[in-house]
Image: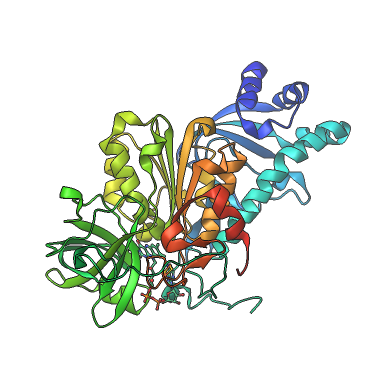
Length: 166
Length: 300
Ligand SMILES: Cc1cc2nc3c(=O)[nH]c(=O)nc-3n(C[C@H](O)[C@H](O)[C@H](O)COP(=O)(O)OP(=O)(O)OC[C@H]3O[C@@H](n4cnc5c(N)ncnc54)[C@H](O)[C@@H]3O)c2cc1C
Ligand code: FES
């Protein structure tokens, strides 16, 4: 089983920053899982004790907005990692997650990975180097979406805050 | 669209040609075309099919643009969004997809079938799709940017065996703002690898939500053997081109389509200057190795 997970990790660029031995160690905390379309992986506010490397399928991150139901804020596809809230206290999910398509993934036991990071700083640093670019990229993408770049002038009127450096 | 720019000495506008020779060859005079059909693509965007020119302008290549006149209102640059009919090297039928954002585009948007529109052109550089022969074609569109890229898809499909994969990644504001929804499905059935994402989903949307750059990684591109065609708002193009370059696609094989305010469209007035470029003449399609430094500068 660990061999299959190791192969999965090696096939994904996400963990390219890890040395072979580190990927092998990480695979020890991973399990191959199938998630059916419509199945909920976690709810906002729940304990963040897992993260997933998505191999196939699509997961939606959502948030419950009173009066508007579950609003999808972003979808994640193959090659991406779902879940960062396990990295730092209070280890609670900031969003919910639900499979939009049948999804295959590697699910990781987050507390165990955390203990491994604490015990082996080189491994912890490599994990950080794997996660940081993705966190940065998604933060940038969120900022760009805030700019509402595709909006026509009439669609912008409510949100137009004017030039920052006139 | 950015604001007006003051002319610098680096770009050299050329003088308008002397009014010699047949009037048919000067781009200074708009030709009359009739609106043959008007298709509403989204709430604010239409595709106009223009035909029956008494004096057709020369044929357009994908990526080039026309100056379209709404008589009595004004003139704006609009790219061709179809392959049209170029019998005898003349544009006998043209397609333009335009979004109503201001006075002129609103007037063009409202033009009913049978009405007359002025056309000057063709202007600017094209996508040069043929230069991607033997390689994968990667098309990345943001919003109305899909319109100038539609002829890239159509010409690649018309000559399918010349190219490798055809990958189309499109971002829209909402599902309702997505252009050519029916055609995207048809292209997908024809073997184009289509992926679409929206900034804001509604409850009926089952596809991706996020920035168009998030579609790049899952597309599994072969950067060593791809040519990219990117069109959308400046910032979207910059982030997309940077994301493609970060995955190994050389900037010289990433093409972007620049937008600047235009007046003459023909390299005479200097209105569209961007550093050393006159966008109407040296663009709008420019390879990213040339465009990147200019796109990063706040004001030139
Ligand atoms: C080479 C080139 C090709 C183009 N191709 C197309 C095309 O295929 N289809 C198309 O719909 N448009 C296209 N455009 C953009 C189009 O030319 C402008 O939308 C148009 O000039 C606006 O003129 P207007 O008089 O209607 O509005 P204006 O009165 O000039 O502008 C009204 C408001 O809209 C804003 N605005 C202007 N342009 C845009 C824009 N592009 N996006 C968002 N807001 C804008 C202005 O800042 C202003 O606030 C192209 C532009 C260039 C330079
Ligand atoms: S020089 Fe006149 S619009 Fe480009």
